View 1: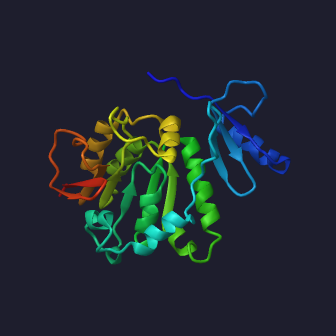
View 2: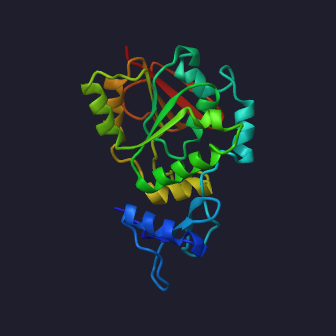
Length: 257
């Protein structure tokens, strides 16, 4: 089993020290002490909250940014017809479907869906990743163009399996559950992008994915949508109802009712 990375909170600017100390207490993490062998710093910077690897070689800080040029370009190109994920959802936003992103991750797919008019509930069990998403949401909410999109994102820190089981017990069934689980990269695959490397280091691989998939199938009123690398094997032995295959990613759609 991989060793859990050591993380310390650090405020480069002393002005943010009180905020950083409060976050360290909230997350039960140490504040940075020189000479200690940390793997990552949780940076409480002036403009963002981010993660920086201080392993050899060290990397630039990583943070989630819904206002980035790359995501803005994807957003401007997206439409209900062109965006494969929207077609996988299969319900128009005007019908107000209840959509759960049960593996929020970096929340970019949910942001794109929100830009197309969907309301999305995002579940993230990693306290650190939840903090990074929350910080990105707060920053983007200050932008007058992004704010209406951000208002459609509803972030919850929770274990998706337990949360969905509670919804099922209360007969509060979402229409669509979206899964984008984290898997270990195959040795022959291309080098993972830096943001995904950070994500994998922080949260590891989703060892309970099959259980989450089973709970999602029982809970979704209409369908479960699973995102996979284009050539990756199926999530489980169950065959999808149909698939949407793109250049790098594939959506496996399981109709549940």
